Length: 403
Ligand code: PLP
Image (tube, rainbow, N blue to C red; front, top):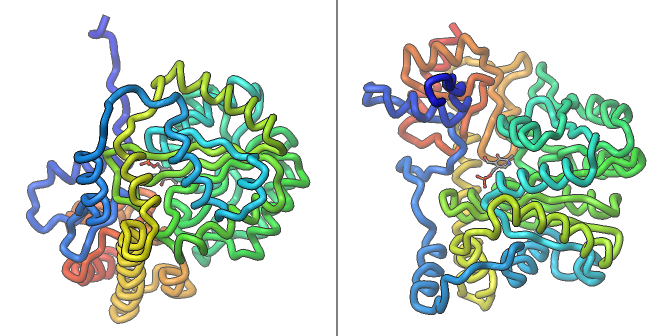
């Protein structure tokens, strides 16, 4: 039977990593995959994570199964990170959280939940969006469509386009909003724009899913939750897909969460029962390690505890990314290279790990062929992969291919 199977196309982003590994050029640079790197080009384990893991080695008493939706302590901490401890959603027990394997797991559980409980609902995704979004939802049988997002002339938000698109989405459909650090563009709405988008979504009767994979990588843990909280203020029902891959550096441990918010606690119980049914048939219950690390860190909130150590490490990652943004813009300016007709200011106005550079497919191909520099075909560059050493090489190479 296997002889008749055709090979699957390579994943557009992870496939590039395979091509990068196979490239013999010693000067090669990988700015494709979304992984944070320090100034030396490494992705180390955070010190707070190491310390939490040591505690787990010492204190863990069982490897028995987790509950289907993970530990209640973890769920509570996730909700507190999302909404703040005093939020009405927590006070009235309107949220339920399932610990999922990564943000991808949260999205896939959401997709299966939608397909099994809201048949016929279409999911609307920004254009562009993270390369895996369409695939995850289509694989669960949810049809996807796109809404306008980026103004290609300025590399800024096409705010009027977003609002106009929302007006055309039928009631009962679902819209995915990137909570912060939009992937792949780095372009986020302002708080005023978030409020307008959230009201429009609520008025249309559309269910929002907030994909929140980068909390703390933009402006700060609280600041980055402002958009989500605007959605919470306007919309009585929504889903949130969290990932702790980037902000805790726990990529391979697969730790994330699906949080559902309902109008009241009884409805939340009903919906989580369906979410748990989806999980049980899929992976039964989540891996414990990553979530235990997050719980250990977040619960040690005394001054000088693991939580403050982690927050300092997160701030250092965020600051390094923002330093690289400024240095990248300066490097382009110095070489007289303009990535948009309006210059390179957009680079420092965007948030998070990525910038949509505006480089064409031909430029991307020339960067790879002539300079062994790997970026995604759409022109997305991982700013968090830039270092003081590779940045001048990158800027020279961009100047060369744009000549
Ligand atoms: N959502 C977005 C927007 C992402 O960029 C990513 C990862 O790159 C994810 C979800 C998935 O995160 P995880 O690696 O935790 O599955």
